[in-house]
Length: 98
Image (cartoon, rainbow, N blue to C red):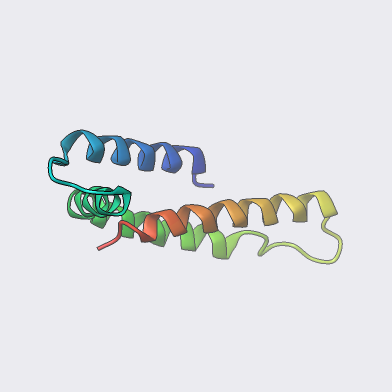
């Protein structure tokens, strides 16, 4: 399984890098600031975001594929939790994809 925490940490690193490297002089308001930092991330990490989305989609599609009616509820809950975490990461990555 893909380490979801590593991907989340990578996104946080990209956001920190963008904050350090975007020239924010003249930027007015938080929406303009977000636009500028998002554009920086798209430009520098958009291809990697696309690749990670594909990997997460593959992981999502294989989760629980071996389950049947005898699978314990706790295991089903773990799969549902993992799917929700993957969906949340994909939503964040979609902001930065090319």
